[in-house]
Amino acid sequence: MERVEEASDLRRILASVRADGRRIGFVPTLGALHEGHLAHVPILAAHTDYVVMSIFVNPLQFGPGEDFERYPRSLDRDAELAQKAGVGLLFHPQVATLYPAGAETLVEVPELSAQLEGVVRPTHFRGVATVVAKLLNLVRPDLTSFGQKDLQQLVVVRRMALDLHFEGEIVAVPTVREPDGLALSSRNTYLDAHDRKAAVALYRACRAGFEAVVAGERVPSRVEEIMAAVLGAFPRIRPDYAVVRRLHDLKPMERLVGRVALMVAARVGSTRLLDNLVMEVGPDGVRETLA
Amino acid sequence: MERVEEASDLRRILASVRADGRRIGFVPTLGALHEGHLAHVPILAAHTDYVVMSIFVNPLQFGPGEDFERYPRSLDRDAELAQKAGVGLLFHPQVATLYPAGAETLVEVPELSAQLEGVVRPTHFRGVATVVAKLLNLVRPDLTSFGQKDLQQLVVVRRMALDLHFEGEIVAVPTVREPDGLALSSRNTYLDAHDRKAAVALYRACRAGFEAVVAGERVPSRVEEIMAAVLGAFPRIRPDYAVVRRLHDLKPMERLVGRVALMVAARVGSTRLLDNLVMEVGPDGVRETLA
Image 1 (cartoon, chains in turn green, cyan):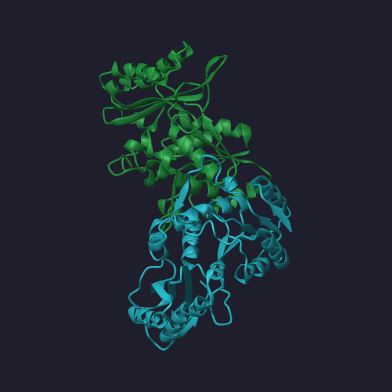
Image 2: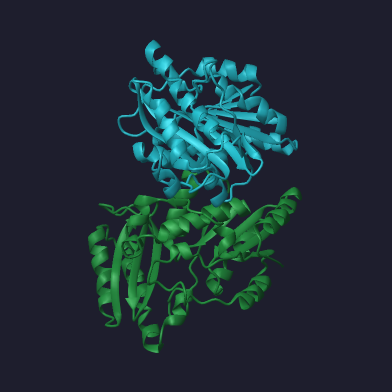
């Protein structure tokens, strides 16, 4: 596995990969790798010939008072995990590489970004869209993967890539879960034992919402009530939202049909966690699906 | 010359150009071609193997009450001129191609965009940066040219391309002028005979500022006074600004040194015109230069 810090080295290596006619897969990460990240590698490898992973704790996507400083960093351990997983090139740039002196350009997807997570984190998705635009231009991947766990991020990035005509596809990778259902997240390391137990509430809420739809419920507000009730049964959980949205633009629906997302965000202690479940609601029934 | 309206056709043709190892030059325009646009073609052709021109009157860069509707459009005449000039591919997309259904992504260079033209046209450069990002992703040129006449646009686009790590270079093409010095502009067609005569004031102001610097003046405010005095001598001219700025970030300077831009904007009748002159102020003297 190559390890690269400079944009020029990255470009040189990828130019030669491309010259060999090899297709490039890409997974951007913030590091602190866990199984949720590593699951991207075989999926990318199945469709491309060379997998690039970036590790970059992007200051622009952290708001004031958020956990930029204490966000877990473990580059050498990450590099080992990435190599074992089959990554061909690990790109871990300095901040000054992605944000050259005087940099001020911002990429925004304003409507999609303002709701849900955007209410609590008003500049978060602007930071994500901006850094992903930079990375897509540097890597020029044929296929880029984002974890379904951060569903709004996936939808924002897809919108951005479509609107700005980035070449290459964007795919979702299924959420990896602990045995009790908790979605893997680098922020789970912040949880103490009690909070860790309570954290399963988010997954339970999504499942309960899904089961209601499977049982025939098609009114979004009723599904949301069921999800909220599950969260409410966990005293350590302070919900931010538990909503039902149309997948492709995250807008509220009047009746559930087509691709629908159940989305939950909540605080457990001082840690904010997310989860979601995406389903296809069709005339022949309801099935869970990838975003 | 190929004429292409669809992004997929553009990509297919350019993929085969690239597969032949040919380098791609690109000049984005709003059409209504004049000698100022056509001057880009031989410059691009000198450094690349295949010249792409786009013609697109971009709604996002026109503010409310601006001249989007009446902006001159002459596609067939433009195509003829482009072909004669040596363009290999003319890309003239529909609005729905560059802005697909639901598109909402914006690219902003907020500080550079807020000053000078941005005071009068607060959303203009956001529209420019957004459409140029789209076009750069569609064309993926090795070399892209912008006219020096719209100097702030050039500086904004350079900043955007650098910040977002677009591959390929951006070059300025010298302003083409009428015999009396008026910079060519598609908006010159709006001028009546009296306004047309007065419009030379902008060029005269830039020259007067330049001559003052050549004569030894190094205090920006004094150069600006000289430029303002020239504009003031033309009763039909209502100046917006006549300023001296550092070229690379358009910031005010305390003393003139290095690459310096003299920038003028003024209304003549209901038409807004721009002009500028860029110079290198060195220890051995002052010379006019390309931005």
